[in-house]
Length: 56
View 1 (cartoon, rainbow, N blue to C red):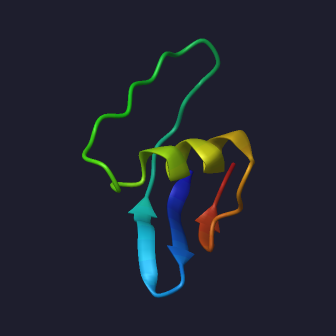
View 2 (tube, rainbow, N blue to C red; view 1 turned 45 degrees about the vertical axis):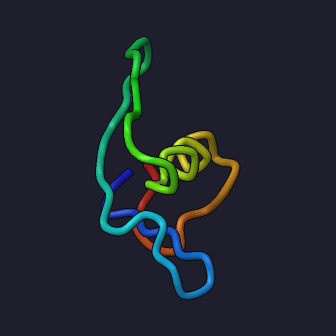
């Protein structure tokens, strides 16, 4: 993901997020409720499309 943004209504859930996960890596996402952890995983899984940015 490179400079990904996901917006629902007027609220930006993810804003300018970039990171990479390669095959075989293990990843843990930690943050408070509503921080966008599940949204980030759904973008990575291809379940939702980002509003802007690139998913490579």
